[in-house]
Image (tube, rainbow, N blue to C red; front, top):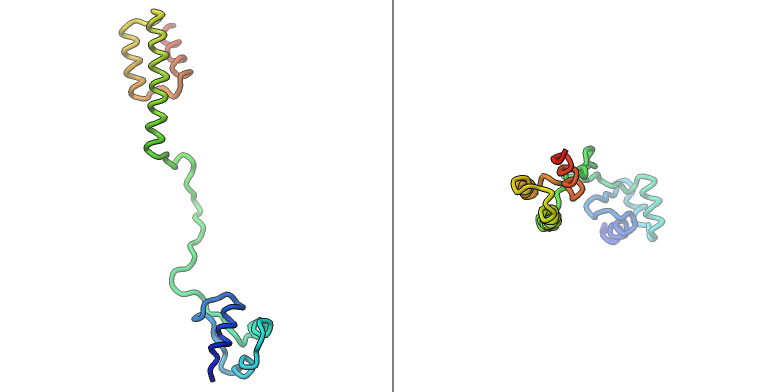
Length: 135
């Protein structure tokens, strides 16, 4: 008995793979008479058409520990761009202060090294540090 057309109809109706759909031997006559998708659905409910479980790799379960924002690293170009803009801003501000004679040469050199080593997060952070030196 050739039931390939019925199997194709079952695949379309139940939206499962061809290999996963199995017809019960005892109910082959009922399956042979099935014409519509609704007939296939009814046979599946009755248990004449069985769907096998998935083999091999199953869908991966959701990770319980997700990567936090702190672990996500920016792309290299983005980090470099941020570094360059910040250092330019800080060096410009340092030159302004140096020209106003508010810092000595040694202090300005020290702060320049700290800028280069990325010690300051922002301009306000650097201002705070300079305020601490002056006290």
